[in-house]
Image (cartoon, rainbow, N blue to C red; front, side):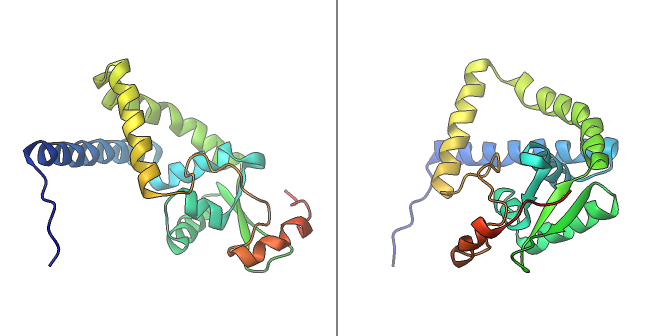
Length: 182
């Protein structure tokens, strides 16, 4: 039987503080976006990721990977964003399984309308409570935990290949993918 590495009192306090802070912060961020922008945080994040991507477009598999979402969950979210007219799906001409999500002008407008309230909420709930030194420590700690948990960059979703396949075998198709039409 393996030896359990129990948390000591300081570690337990740190863990519980981390959990509580995360739950309180994200519940309030979620509530603000739902109340003011009528969208969940997950949809807001998709719009942000697309707005920062070249041509406001990312391959669906890359969008799922970088947003730490399953492909099916992301597909459902993009379908809802399509219904709102904020995102458009584009098929990859060389890979029948592949598709892209593209932020529409209406989606960009919705993001621009939602962003000020979201940023003010994040600023007031998180950054206003911390000194610049604490902010730097939080960033350093967060980056260390992310690096410990994944080798893949998750923000921003840079390095997206236009027709990179869903599996390494499909990556050979990259050079064959013509420019997407908008």
